[in-house]
Length: 292
Ligand code: 13P
Image (tube, rainbow, N blue to C red; front, side):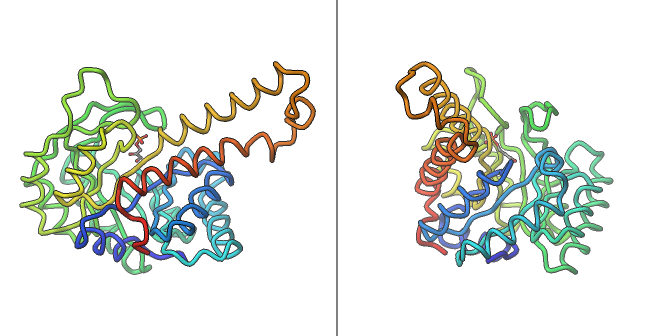
């Protein structure tokens, strides 16, 4: 069932768990996320970056594929189809394509422009029954080839953007995308508390969910984080499982993979299973199982 993400995140916030946002890149990833959510009776958010959308030939293709797959698989748990880190134009494309949720990332713009664009897109998204996430204080790391340092968002800027009527807020608290450096200082919980105090109980979003230690994830959820984004972890397990499968087949002439491994459906199956296991592990950690 495709829904916007507002209700599931307000419920998560009130009941002290978080909903996982898992990025997709192709059909296998989508199927892995949907079937795991259904098996575990968990709400879920499917995240699509601009780069992944382009790879899948555009946001219209993505929206039609996810909707059709959701129906064909008979998914009954709430699923939001959400744009991850959109520019103004990509937000417009996703509204037109039939997504149920968007993220406008104006964090690299001057604040006034971020506020102005966020307000326009908030009105538009709500007119279409969609939810909207906004960002202040750039999340560090590299995503879609763009690298930024981790920032700590200013609570006053957070208050200003929340007052525009957005549904959930990504505010940097030292988190970064991808692999964390060895000297990473950890999440800044003092900053999280200041942001929480300034933003009137709005659900908060934690990007860069891959490299944050479990105890800090649990602490962040206890402090009001109700959406956690995961991408790199799924990429890592997908790549590792696929490589292992190929190696096993090519190195061992007696292996079943040697002759059957070229079937793309078989080739991608270990990666698909690995993503399912990773999504399950994260849903357990986030506490969203049986919360559909
Ligand atoms: P990771 O790649 O670190 O899991 O972060 C994903 C993310 O925040 C997507 O917006």
